[in-house]
Length: 132
Image (cartoon, rainbow, N blue to C red; front, side, top):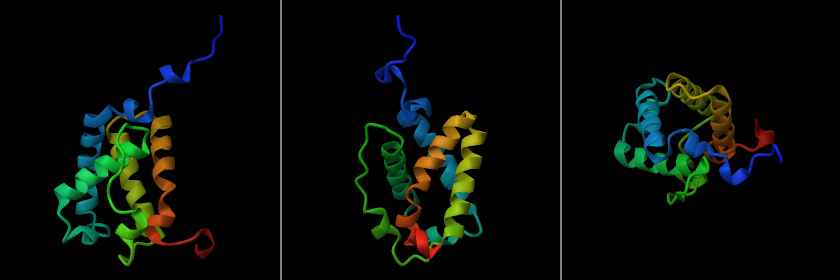
């Protein structure tokens, strides 16, 4: 008998975070923080927040191995010309970390979520690795 785990039996990150309802709760808590943050909140002043939350639930679910596909604009297009810097993105990720930890997400899953979301930094900020 083998001690190997069958990858098909291993829950995805999406499943470990509670699936659709778990992601929805996390996004709601997270965007409460983002919208009230003094540096990030102004980016969302004229944004229909329920639509944004719905798109973020879809985006996070897709990015975290869920069954959904993201149907919104490309990240580069959605964030183009908004003035989002690496500092803003770092603050966003910090609030995401806080939200995940407050929700009791295990540290290895917190790291996995942050790793996944951080892969999109260049699309969101418009920076390339050499532009710093």
